[in-house]
Image (cartoon, rainbow over all chains, first blue to last red; front, side, top):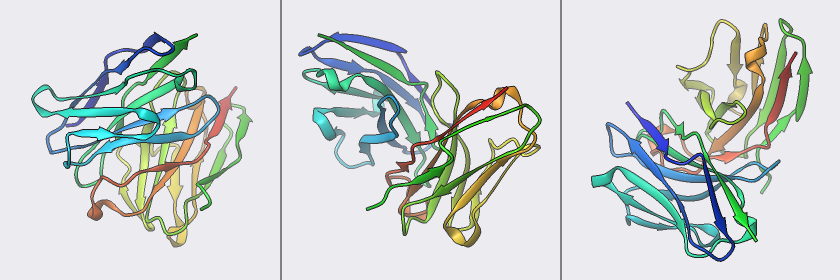
Length: 113
Length: 118
């Protein structure tokens, strides 16, 4: 069975400081992993995805994530937060066959000026 | 490229009434998904179509929810009768290839339909 756990429901950072959003997953198969962002009153948008190629994945807007199989983690990071990064972030796991897409509960990122 | 279209954007109904949502995926996308997102939670997959066939509907409450994707393009999701706990945002997404093509395809999401059941 698959599952995904986002370890923080809220994260608050100051503008210009690093961002770390944590995600752990469980999967019986080699999974595909994604991070999506949801800005208020906007649709979900893909930030990045891992599909068994390079374990360090670079996404849009300076975000990246590292797949660590031994730790079953896929944490999202950004070196320097911007005010426009304030949003809800979802970690997503999907099995190789494309079934059973599961979203985490989400982490709301607050960015202070 | 046009995105995923959904209508209506907002709907308010009384409990026990019925409601239908419509989704038009990105042209050429084989797979279509319906999600339910309750306030404060992540989206939950209700049903997944590949072309006009159902791939997964294990989390669809089939006693009250139904969905179809005629001709493998547009899709409708219906709730009959609605309950208070159905208040949520209903998201439609589509992706380029179906499950046989692997799960790595990006899902593109529509703006959602916000449903309030009173």
